[in-house]
Length: 121
Image 1 (cartoon, rainbow, N blue to C red):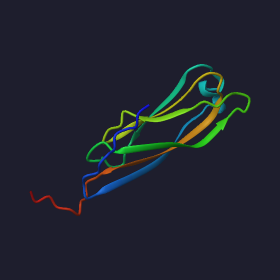
Image 2 (cartoon, rainbow, N blue to C red):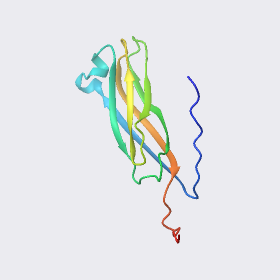
Image 3 (cartoon, rainbow, N blue to C red):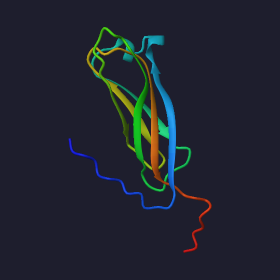
Image 4 (cartoon, rainbow, N blue to C red):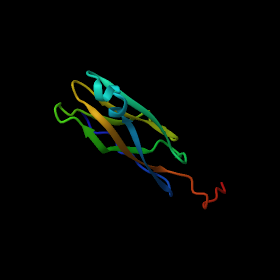
């Protein structure tokens, strides 16, 4: 895997937006992340409170990870289909992994409009 290109922020106003999302609590209702096997996926649309001027850099991380200790723990958490207005928060697991519940945190950083700056051009 190669490294991703550097993102240059060429604006006077940089915005940071953050959030947290419980992706599932499958132990409550015997959902697929808790009772299933093989490839499984949980996908959620995240909409930014304010849109960015261009596509922001988005970082995601697991902030709650409740699993069964009798199986291997496998996880892939990513931000997909990132736009200036939001992204897909995606969790994947596979094999015999049993995940009871999961919460993910995210941070988006990018250029934003500053209402204090006037465009006189």
